[in-house]
Image (cartoon, rainbow, N blue to C red; front, side, top):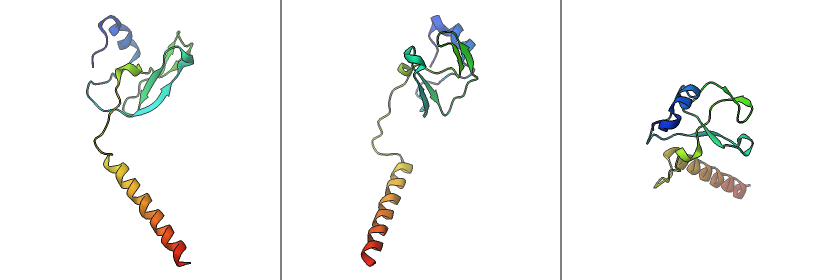
Amino acid sequence: MKPDPEKSEEIRRDFEIWITKDKEYTIRELLDNNGIVPGVLLDEVHNFPKFFKLINRFQEPAFAQWRFRKLNYASQPAEAVSEVEELVELEQDEKQQVKVK
């Protein structure tokens, strides 16, 4: 994903690492920024903190929320399915233990 042409200079100054179009990212943190300009920090991207006059503090540059879309998987990712199965097995074992006692 290329930065907006009219903002590309500002973006190059603030972000060492930029996001790539059609790549999946994991949200690390949502920043409210005093209600002025909400932003998203990502697990896969870490930039050095900078001072932002708009919010009057140092922080890692955050990406605008509108740059992302939520993914809808046809099924749950394998690790989530595995965790659910383990939990069900655990609950069944506990129920069996309760019945035996």
